[in-house]
Every structure is written in C-alpha cells, then in structure tokens.
Image 1 (cartoon, rainbow over the protein chains, first blue to last red):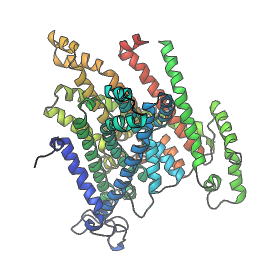
Image 2 (image 1 turned 120 degrees about the vertical axis):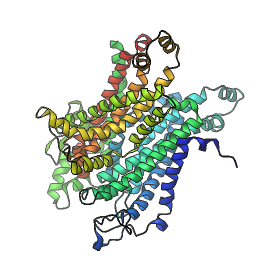
Image 3 (image 1 turned 90 degrees about the vertical axis):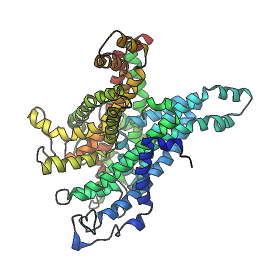
Image 4 (image 1 turned 180 degrees about the vertical axis):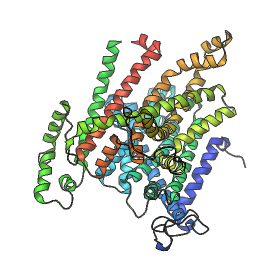
Length: 276
Length: 315
C-alpha cells in the first residue's frame, strides 16, 4: 500500500501522532482513566505520584491522571466546536465580503473592530456576560476568533474570483449561486482548513485561560485549564497538580500547529510565506 | 506625508466606533438584573435601587447609550462601583505596568526572534533552521500562564533567584524593577518570539532570491552583512506587520500573566472586575485596550513609510 504524500512531511506526521494520541486518550477517557475523576479520597490528599496514582492526587485526593484524561476531552470538545462554529460564521462572512464589494467595507469594519480587542479579553468579557458554561465558552471564543477566519476566507475569495475559469463560468451564463458553489467555495477550502487548524490550537489555549481566570465551564467536570487553576494554590506542596495538565495542553497545541504547518505546505506551497 | 497620516487617522475612526459599540452593547446582553448582581445577595432593595440609579439602569437602553457616548466624548468612562473611583483614572494609573510588560516582552521577542529567523533563512533546510523553527513553534505552543507557574516554581521557589511576584516601579529601584519584570516579560516574549521568527524566516527567504541580493553577494559583501543590511531592510514590512499583531497578543497575554505574578496592572483590575461584575470597569478596560491596539497599529503603519521609501512615493 502506498503512503499518502502528506504523511511523508515530518511536521505533519509528528503533529498527527501528537494530536492523535491525545484525542485517543480523550475519546476513551472512561476506559483509560484508572479512577473516577471527581471521586474524593480524603485519605490520600495531595499525594505524590506513585505506582497507583501515576501523577499524584489533588487536595481532595482525586487522581490527577484521570482528571487530565477527562479534562482533555472537555478541552478538545470545546476547541472542536469553536473550529466548526468559527469556520461557518467566519466562512460565510468572508465569502459575502469577498464576493460583494458593497458588503465588504461594512463587514470588514465590524471584523476590524472585533479584532482590535485583545482576543482573550473579549472572550473573558463575553463569557462572564453570558454566564459561565461550556456553551458560553464556545460562543465567546467563536466571537473572538471568527474574524481571523473571515479575513482568510475573504482573501481566498478575492483570489478565486479573479481566476479565468470564474470569468469563463460567468461568460457562459452561470448564476451566482452556481459559481460560488462550483468554483469559489472549493477553491477556498485549502486555506480555510489550514486556518481552522490554527484556530483549533488558539481556541484550546484560550479556553485554558478562560478556565484559569475562573470564567470557564463550572465544576465538577473540569477542562485542562481549570485543573491548573485548581492546583495553583498548592503549587509549593504539590506542584504536579498544576504542572502536568500544562504538558497535555502543550502536546495538543504543538501537535495542531505542526498539523497546520504540514497542511499549509502540502496544500499550497505559495502560502508558505503567510502567517496567521 | 501629512496627508497620509490624516488618511490613516480617519480610517481608524469607524474601527473605534465599532469598538465602542461592542463595549457598550455588552451590558445589554447580560441576562439577569445587573444592579442586583452587583449589589450582592445581602443587599436590600434600597441599595439595589441606588446602584441601579448610579449606573443609569433605570433609563431605557437608547438613553443610556447616548449618556455613555456623551461621557466618552468628554473622556469620562463612568465610575467603578467597587473602587469608588473613576474608571478612566483607575485604568490609566495601572496602564504603565501593563504597557511596559507588553513592550518589554515584544522587545525581547524581537531581539531573539528576528536574528533567529535570519539564521534559519541563512541556513535554510539545515539543522540550524530546523532547531530554530522547532524552538519557535514550541514557544508559541506553550500556555503562557502555565509557563509562568512553571518558572515561579523553578526560579522563585526552588532556586530562589527571582521574586515570585509583585511589582517594583522603575523609579524606586531599577534593579528590583528588572527582577520583578524578568519572568513575566520572559514568558510573554517566548510566546511572541515564535511568530516573529517564523515571519522573519519566510520574508528573508523570499527576498534572498532577488537580484539586488545577488548583486550584493557578487560585489563581495560578507554573508552576515548581506543579511543584516540588505535582506533585513527589504523584509522589514512583513516583520513589522507581525510585530504589530504580536503587540496586541502580548497585551492580551500581559492581562492574563498579571494574575500569575500578582502585578498591579490593567489585567488585575479588569479581570478582578469581571469576577465581581463591575461593568463600568469591564467596558472601560475593553475600550482602552482596543484603543491602545489601534494606536500601536497606526504607529506601525507610519513605520512602514520609514522602513520602505517606495511606500512614500506611492501616494
């Protein structure tokens, strides 16, 4: 069997392994986690890592490893929902702005306005406005990061609409809907996919910050950021609680960034010079 | 030149208008009773009504908005309920901490990231390139607040080289200031170094194929000088663009990292206000940080003209 060419790119392959490993652990957290992530065990509080509790226990005697496995599931789920939502919203806004010059100025001013805020501050403010929950985190991060997707999409549409084949389609009398469906949207998929891979990484980092400052999804099912926040008060006696979830976040984010780089280089060599 | 500055300034107006609309509109989205929530569960009816009147919440939204904009045009962002202080002065007195943190982080990131990107471009596809780019990617993938906790644990708790937090103003004690800002700025710099190094590399690679670089080499210039003088100045515009974006991200990062290192900046104020639902401070914080970002990007726009004479001719 022949290996697809993209897997031969080292960054893509490493990224796939990293993301795949964490995603596997997250999906099968129920089976893989040695303990119940929310079950207290007051006889072994702030326990050091040992043979039974591989990453130690927290101040309620809960198994840190089990909490990280379940936390990765929450973080990945929120990240994935942000990727889908911002892809749809940013994609539509970018498509409209790129295709109809009249809408362009208005839409992009709004996007510029949204992007003028530090993304993380806008997300924090929105999360607290709407009241902390998993859904709120998704909405807040989607509002904060869709403008980036819209910008990339708009750029891709502008490139595509200048192509001769689009001119040709118009010349033979194709309707706008058909041109968009058949010619414009397919041409924007590659840059959009690359962008959304990066958004996935950014969303996971930003969700961790939301949880860390205390406006993320509420307990008892914590995301990775919430576990770090939880372990912060006991950093000196039990540093493993706050430090080990960060390694999991770094693995996912590094993996996603590598995947994004690999996709970008494979799908469009000309895009190598653009940054997100 | 002057005309160009005016054009850029005018272009910022609609952006700032959108920014102010969003900052104001946020309170319209709050589901519950803002006044009751701010007053706390132990407050009686009179206290709640007092806060409601103080925030102008007994007026219809449109009137509230006009009132808010009226104050804004006079530089009045309202009054913090919890601090009993005007929002503008509360933010302005904390802004130097946040700005110096973000500024120093960006400076550190540029001093390391740009040479790293040039090195990677000069040794493209060799081990130096891969090591530099691997490091850059690693830096931008680590959660900043977590990295802060890790550094505190290693450098402050275990080795006791640096204080674990707190702020010493530069005017009080320059060395103490440096010690108090080193870790938080270093964390943010590590994050921002990545995008800068990556952009520098790709911009430098693109430029290094051009004719004038070949000429520079042909006339016998040493390779370091070709890169420092010719490649870097031709690649300056995209690097500046990334630096402008990076400043915005560093600003957001500074707001968060202040929590980790207990620094008395805008982030401590605004995130504290978020947790206690002090809406005027949240609105003012959003507005002013966006304002700073727009101002920095205006400066970046003008710097383009300085680094690239071709753009001066264009208009």
